[in-house]
Image (cartoon, rainbow, N blue to C red; front, side, top):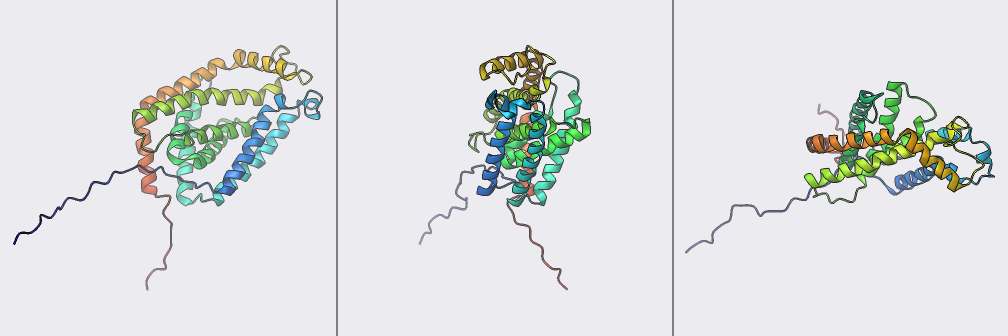
Length: 287
């Protein structure tokens, strides 16, 4: 009597990488984030949205301050919604480490056109840890950086919201989880390049109305129409920030391509060990 051969090798099961979500966005958090982003778009773009005869245009010098105060409250609302949706102690610890690192990286290029290495860290962190964590990380990092560099002013809430969008966008990239290696790094580098220009343009929109009559040819004119102000804004960007934005974009691309693979592996290893999805339970000690 012969026995059938027994196979001792386990069947090969394809492993599909699973993307970690340090913050789970529920319907309430998504709705809150969407509403705050909509108000943020209005806060950035009000010079092009408000009619010339509106009261907002009549208070062109006061509007940026009012929007800045409003954004502080809205960002606080989003932070509370994210915390309620599952920002546990492990995620808070990770948030603190990455935010401190990003805040420390920002002053490295202070005063040098476009050398802002914190942006590549935000791109990689948002990609690995997801859009909810990315939005919180962008806000906290920019807030800590402002305190560290003394850059506290009416522009700070705009910077926090813009960096939150920047980091969240990396987590929203429509890339399959199994797309790893050079393809992923190149995609993140391309995103960092264009998003760096988008961040710079958004911050130009936030600071542009403050010019007033200091530079009449490129300043915001509350009595002009949208086409005229748009032309002034383009001239303002070309004259003041295109070189800085290009430097930021190039630095982000170079650091992402060179340091990205190693940092992505380190972030994914840290998130696997953190096991954000695991529930933390406390048991009474045995007597």
